[in-house]
Image (cartoon, rainbow, N blue to C red; front, side, top):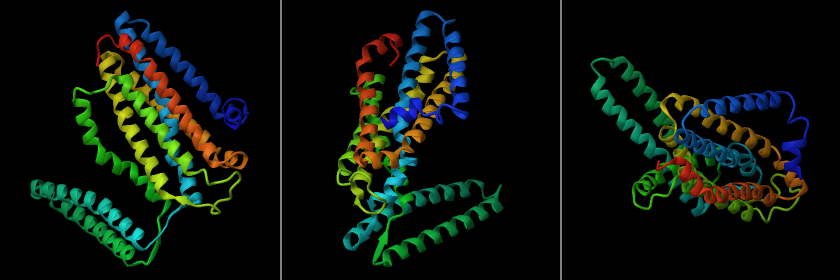
Length: 325
């Protein structure tokens, strides 16, 4: 009820800036369709396939971008971020690897770059190395402070780095999967991305069952494991879906329309982000009237339903793509 009212009937949502956005969206879609219809049937069908993919992208980013809105509030108010003893040691080791390895790789690249450019840009390289020495000093001081502490509380912002970490860990695995004979169709990847994204929120919904209706911030704390698992599933979903849309611009769209369709792709992402902000802002209201688990179930049901629909559209989309894989 709250979601329906906020998205469709709340006057504050359909006034001002939102009216301008809706008008601009209608005009843009009219422009797209008027240009697409000028092409031959095969080219037109392929562009319609891409438009369908762009449409379902909205539902993915609507859920995924909760990482910048409601999940931050959830981590701050309802996740137990305090660590002591062996739990703190394990976290410090993991956090050290997460911090030092990427920084060491960047430093190694800079050393190689210095060897190539020291005769042409010596002063620039010296300044760069001084800056990186300062960064290393800050990192080592931070790690020393964390390892010597008897207890610690993980900052809310720490969870946001998990997406980048999981991408680095799993990107090569997915690249090998896409190059193998088990490579799914475009619709299959989209369906997987949406469904796995929804399952990530399903994990949060299950982990939040102990948070009652109207719970005040800080009164109930749940394990951070649920949030870490959710970020893992969200990242896997992103690896399934996000690269597909970008690659299919060049595969399905003629050269003269590539830039235009890139605009449509990013417009879909923008709409998804707008919906993410609107729905994410309902967290307090939904928790007060229902509970936290209900809030996360919204982002479980919508992506999973969209993913199932994409899967059912697999054959029609293959026909529209006319042999493009």
